[in-house]
Amino acid sequence: MPVYEERDRSRWTKDGRKFYFKCPYTDMYGKRKQKKSKMYKSRPAAKKAEDEFLLNVATTDETDLDIMFKDVYKEWFFIKSRTVKETSAHTIKLKIEKNILEFFKDFKLHSIKTNIIYTWYEWLEKKEHNTEYDNVLITYLKEILQYASFNYEFDNKILSKIEKKKNNSIRTIKNDSEINYWTYEEFNQFISNVDDDFYYTVFSFLYFTGLRKGEMFALTWNDIDFTNKKVNINKQIVSKLGKKTYAITSTKTNNSDRIIDLDNNLIDLLLKYYEKQTKLYGFNQNYFVFGSIKPLSSTTLKRYLQKYIDISKIKPISPHGFRHSHASLLIHLGCDSRDVANRLGDTIETIENTYYHMFPEKKKNTINILNNFKNNV
Image 1: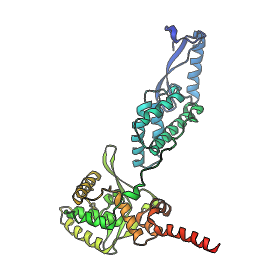
Image 2: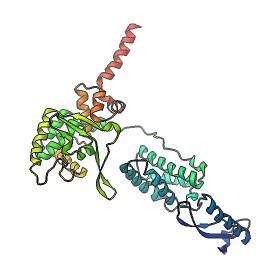
Image 3: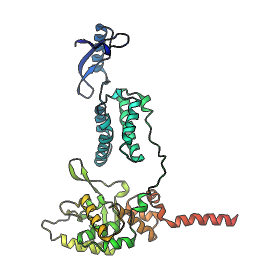
Image 4: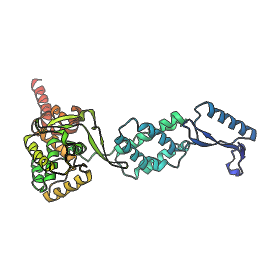
């Protein structure tokens, strides 16, 4: 391959190096790429460097030091996507492409220095995410650059400067579980205004089971055991998964696979609804309980929820608020954290951390212990 002489003197190095080589090669992944070298003092020196480079490419895993950040990201994501669920991979991809790749896509990997990272911090700040969300993005950037460090000799000193944000603001927003729920009285005020039999069943089912909406969407009639009054939760539906309208996946965690009991009133409600569904043309047990051939969509559920909230003139909650409401109801009825965890498909630790404020007997027990201690001193 020919050696080139840089004609633009402003591009020469301080000690007068002006010759470089440029040649195509195939990297370790079988991709055709082009290598442009640094400057050398003479043509023979540049030619020797080219020969050594091509020899290394042929005999070793020589890396491309001119690789673009976006190409490193693609390699990293290819590996990452095979270690997580399809739904998680899709979410990660959306977050990174919108908040990391959008900024770094035109950067060569080795042009990214500490000042560029700090500029990205400032760019990210303008998006006004919360601190937790930004820290997730920072973690992903660090993972990508750690991959680059191992495979493309990215500077570890720069990598060590990437740190998560500290949350120094005073927390004023309450935990979602403290505000995003209805008491039984509030639910009755809401459900008494639902004049559609289908949505009356949907909202009642959510309130009295605490299922995640994706778990409810995925239920088929095969999952309902009318004889033993149970429902089998073993899958979930995730909507807007790339080009797909929805996808059926495994449940969120190992604890989420569960069989729970249904109360008598809810069974009666489901049975009446089931009898109507069986009259549909082509009906079979594989039909979605809340839908038919296709499941109810998340956007439709939200739209009807808001419609009846407006009619009821009650404080708004999200679909996930029904899950918090069910937990609140169980705790109010005297169920302990183990009962609540089993029914909601969570760990006892998660339930106690999320709903601690709803377990008044725990707080009362603490003060009783202190009173007993002082009385006995």
